[in-house]
Length: 360
Image (cartoon, rainbow, N blue to C red; front, side):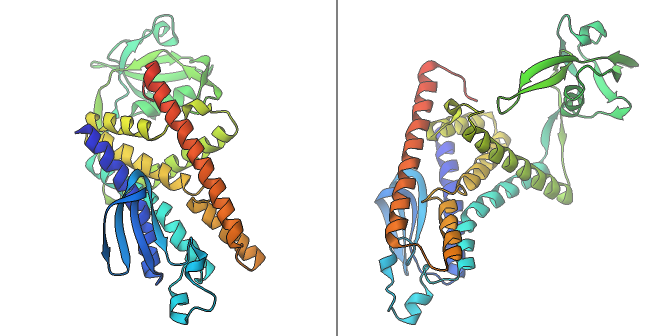
């Protein structure tokens, strides 16, 4: 069942992406020749009106083929006005950009909607309750105990474990005053977090404050109203989008090692893992992958949406389209780069499995 969940997730997100291109093309009056889930030879399909809807043999993406988009020769310069009017090639630049942007935007919108309903349903959140005190640490020296609940730091109320750790991590070597609830007692404890060099999410070293405690694992449910859920969903979508962009930059700068790149196998493994963990984890994972899919497609690589937008930018500067030969060469280079990246990612996936490394 978990494998089916992974396949459904991957297929759904591809479908959403291509549906964005498809709907905006239809709204713009552009003739859509084919809507395909997957690449390569057709497995099954049906012609409905002017569009062929197919499922293809290589389930690693999809595409929407529009009249005059890839094969410039589809529409001749001397074609009749109606055929030109329905061709992607002869649309105003802003319409073509909107059609191309629609795929990534639909992925981001999907993530936003998922997060909205997640926050409406309620998110389990760690309480600031200590589950373990490490020996020879500031917490141990301050006589903190298992079961203590941190109610406030420097007079500011603390309701979540993340709020507590944010303050402590940001205060290396700085004295803090903790208000601690221990059974029926309320205690005031002075503590100074140790300075520790640790690697962050992107593998860069940062100095953090640590006091040497672990959470108890006790949680409570945070539910938002409609307005709160919308705001939280927007914030979370923005946060993950920003992290994705920064991650790509750090990868290019080689701050993040290339060995961390994962491919379809890793995505399927993670989807299985999240499906097993429960519906909430699965949907949050789906939202994160949807954001990643949308942003990665905006990279200025030929054959990706970002590459098409880049070409349109050049066309706007030059006041005329690039030659068909130039576009074809660029697309072949872009496709070659993507194939090599996919092979490298799958190599990483297989190596991760054979070496027994845990999933991220």
